[in-house]
Image (cartoon, one colour):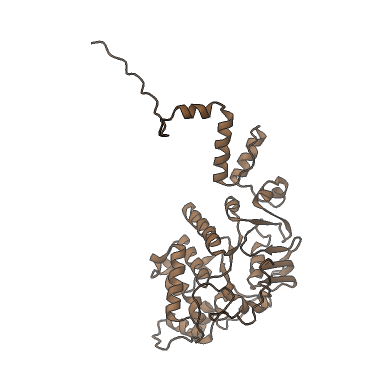
Length: 396
């Protein structure tokens, strides 16, 4: 009985729906367990209770390929049932979706259609309660809309998630709900073991994922003892271990210190540039948007999608920011203030662009600055130090 209760509580095996949950909704933890063989679920549950099980978990005999060949099996065949549109088609499309929660809160994601093209970085902005998480949960198939349409890689994710499950990774806002194994290696290896990869393939994939996020040294650590930033990296490694094409992130910078935020931002941009992973992210941190987004969607409270454009388009519209209760980024606010004071320097949104603008403006503001700077340099380009002031001599 204890085994069954543990399995339901921690692994979602045959877990009854919580009181009040609407039909068609799924617990977020189901993303990692709903396609898992029952024998493996009970094997892991028993092992976590201290049982010494010598029988290996259920595995499939189908060979797998470690990397590449997205959407195809090891032999180059397309995965059965997988629907793929032309590369130019959006891989995610959400059109006028309505969902009502058990407390009768209604979210109507309408207005503009939400579309994500392959290889894009898309950020969703909006106040609390506007439906950002609801939108992401529909993309992940955790919620099924009462009205409207949702398409991910050409299929309805709520009804046919098994067709696309290896192509989608997710990082939830509360990573403690996503980490389900005692150690880092156990947690990151959960998905490939569930899908029946060989021991060698599991080891290779886990090692690659841990090295990718920079936590290879934590592989044998207990997850409960890690910091918030380290836990988030563990959850991200678990999302990346199957080499997904689409990565969905809900408030990924929540609760991180400045150094961890910088590391995570660089990591996500590297995944996009090197692996061409498509990113869909909901965040309140407007200061990272310009460096992390090709397209921005703005939601109002209640779910209306009112704007779509580049970060420059969105943050240069003060009326839109006020209406959607979004604070402008610090740099946007600074250069807006400079414009009001008569210094028309444009609207840079990243530190690099702001530094370049200020250097160029400084050179224009001092016409003789360039000549003076050249005269102050040695022939080899090194800057000549000013002469030291003469020390007055004292009379004996």
